[in-house]
Image (cartoon, rainbow, N blue to C red; front, side, top):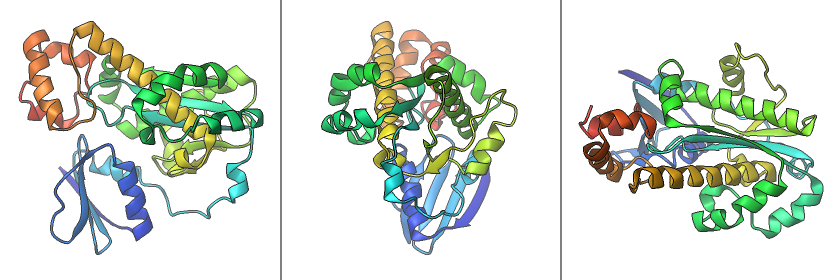
Length: 292
């Protein structure tokens, strides 16, 4: 098990918690600001500014930290159109796929999108996303990638989560570029990894989209990223629905204790081999359910 300690400023600690909000939040230890449990790492932020990463995935989370904060772009850049943005969902869910979307927004679509109240999908009710999702998908040019669990488990045997996300974001932009002809000058990635590490993960890819803008919390700042987030969430919900219908089983979202119970119930009904097709097996929930 690896352990790393990094000194971070208050803004970086706050941004890190924002990135961990889909993970399991634990009882806060003494002198700590928060502690989160991911699939393969425990991350504890202390009031002193020290952040401790413990677990098999600790080195990957250290590597995924954004580099030192660059100057914030002028507000006018956020309102620059056309623009593209990419985001992903499902990485914090034990059940269900990983979905990445890159979306293209033109100036003439801005008023309509804002009238719909488009924002980060995590801040939007799933019922509303279901209501407007198909309409947004029909009007907004986009590239959508859905990585099912069987393929995810196969890839994860040789690629960590950050590498997988980097490759999916790049491929989404590659597909979008072919769809619309030429990408605009502003293409934003909701930052989950330092820019240099992102491109390092893509060193063996045949096509790599360069000159992307990386920014944390981009889904709340750029309309294109918000659209990508919404479309990805809508596709995730449809995939989740299909999975529940196929197995006639109610799968919980996230990776909490209720997931551990569902794993046991699912295995009793379908056998542990079938988990390979509907779950991210490297999550700690697999071991906690004591079925492997």
